[in-house]
Amino acid sequence: MTERYLNHSETLSNGCKIKVRSEILRDGSLKMFIGIYKPDGSVIVEDNDLAPDGLDMEDAFEWGIDRAKKIGSGQKVE
Image 1 (spheres, rainbow, N blue to C red):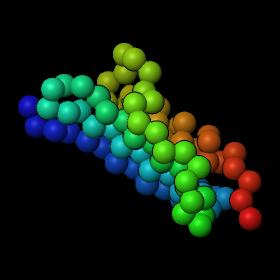
Image 2 (image 1 turned 45 degrees about the vertical axis):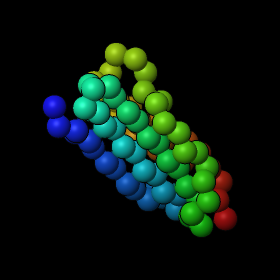
Image 3 (image 1 turned 90 degrees about the vertical axis):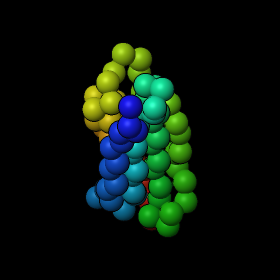
Image 4 (image 1 turned 90 degrees about the horizontal axis):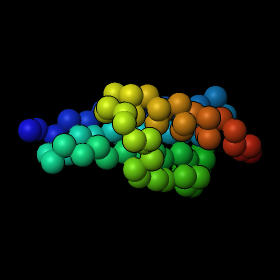
């Protein structure tokens, strides 16, 4: 099996940046990364393996994007 992955990067309206990666590894396991950053680049959240059990790669990816947007949009930045 070849590794498959999806990446998403976006700048939110408040200037925060999000990065989400969903990846199926060669052993078939799902690896997730969610990163949320202030406009100056400082880390708000960087976390792995956040996807709820039972989601396939695409659903985990969408879940991760939604989660990152909610956290990032809720930040008060100057």
